[in-house]
Length: 63
Image (spheres, rainbow, N blue to C red):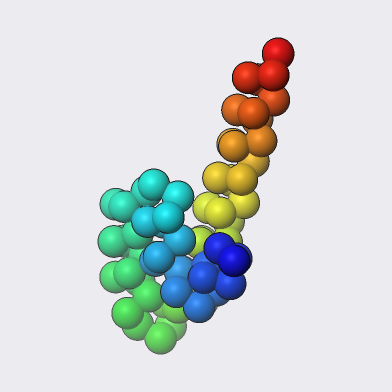
């Protein structure tokens, strides 16, 4: 679900993963049509990093 949001409303993903400052910067970038594509790519990348970080934290807790 977050991946769809990352493509359609990139700034919103940053708020859902706890990075509000990046969300505001992404919103400013997203306001322009030219900036929409970089904002979407940035949001998808940040979402991937967030998921990786969560998996690492879970693995370390199990140790």
